[in-house]
Amino acid sequence: MKILVIEDEAAIRDLICINLELVGYKVFSAEDGLIGRDFLEKQSVDLILLDVMIPGIDGFSLIEDIKKYNTPVIFVTAKESVLDRVKGLRLGADDYIVKPFETIELLARIEVVLRRYNKNDDIIKFKNIEVDTNKRIIRLNNKEVYLTAKEFDLLLLFLQNKNMAMSREQILNRVWGFNYIGETRTVDIHVQRIREKLELKEFLKTVFKVGYRLEE
Image (tube, rainbow, N blue to C red; front, side, top):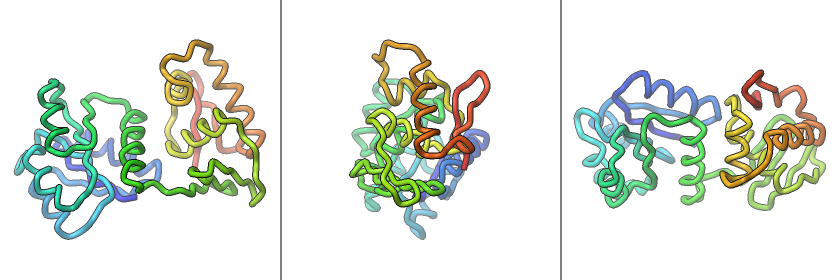
């Protein structure tokens, strides 16, 4: 999957690009609207992360040019007023995320938008594991392995956020939901089961005082 990041602040642009590359996306970047527009005239991408306040052509104006490519757009901006959000969505943006944000939230929003456009891969492979996300079938060394619904969702979360350290609270929110009432120990138990069932002890690492990370 190819993503174009149009963001004028170098530190933010670099951080977004690094994190997207860590989880397997091919990433391109542009520091202003003119460069971003020129890039899109020469090469197609699967999704665009677009800042609103960028030089050359601002994001609200640039999205008008982007429409002809039928490429999903997520606004990434510091403009947090409701009117700005509504304007961005009415202009054709698929989502709107306000700075500052956590990387895991950005990745989740990207996944949702790509899924909406049917751009996500149905088959995800990691080492000797193959996951069919549509049929919810998992194979280890070509042999089907049974996981519970939560174990499957947890595995998918790790696969979609490879090399990213996630806290137990973040994992609970993503897999069990914000309304879940229970202890973070639930995450530890499910991680242990996944490690054993899929031979992931070497790759599904515990991050001290944080949570877990699936290492490529």
